[in-house]
Image 1 (cartoon, rainbow, N blue to C red):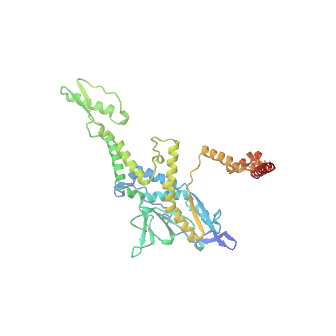
Image 2 (cartoon, rainbow, N blue to C red):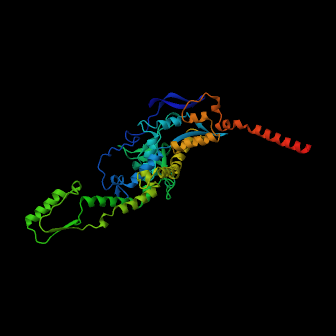
Length: 433
């Protein structure tokens, strides 16, 4: 016995919502929600990613780039169309649209699922898995993200196809059939069945970035170099020496005491021994940062690096990012899979489209409106509707202003008639002569 709930089924009158006994969703309390009961345990060195612990990786430029990709993938406007003899017709009511508006019982939006899925693919070997439970008549009832770390694809004997999936994240392992999983993956030159994570392409870059950051941290916390040398012309007594050391440590140890004045007794000189080479971390980090951004295909302004950035080039960077990174990525990875999903599960004539059109800024929009008005492309009422205003009652507001402005000069037909009359009169006068 399952759960009585309303589902959409196809009847003679089209798609209708009816109460039915829906089979129970196949998962443990942990599996479909992606809950890992050991999430609270400290991350150890055995839980490594490219030589770096996950907790350290999440503080790097790689995480910033991956987060930017996921965040912008989630900005997609998703549309459903149906192929007709006249082209594509947009569909506004359909069970698939209901499904993506409320993907699961954990109140996760589809945007969040896309964001998390992108993170799974970037950092977890290039794969993301959605569990799709079926209801009556095999109608999909939800999308549940299974964290890739705990999912294992199972292959046939020839290693040419995936036969099922095993989830290990809950209190016991759960087996899912191939048909129950939507498997998203980034392109992998070595496999047609599983993906390759973006971070896997970084080689040692992430390691180097982490080691530089760790060196900087240790340098400022526990500098083992002789940072400052104090020289006395005469040998200091033990008590004077110890008192000097204690005074220096008391008033100058720690970043919160940097810059405090120092007073020395006797004939003592101070020499700074730390050269500029030891402090030149920024250049090395910028080099690794740029390489990471290049591999993730993320412009620097997108991750809040604002050197020499103004509104114009920041907007251009965002436009380039959406057109050359996000839109192709979404089309290949998500749009193609969801398009295949609706064709297999609902109707072969359905088409899913992702749209990442950048919102036009107000100044550009007003300039476009002026052009539309002056060239006669749109009427005043059409422009008013675009901005959400009510139509103007004046009948002239439904006529493009270009024609209204030129009406006093006569219509094209009138002008042609006048021109023809002038030519006829001219010919008559020549004949009479």
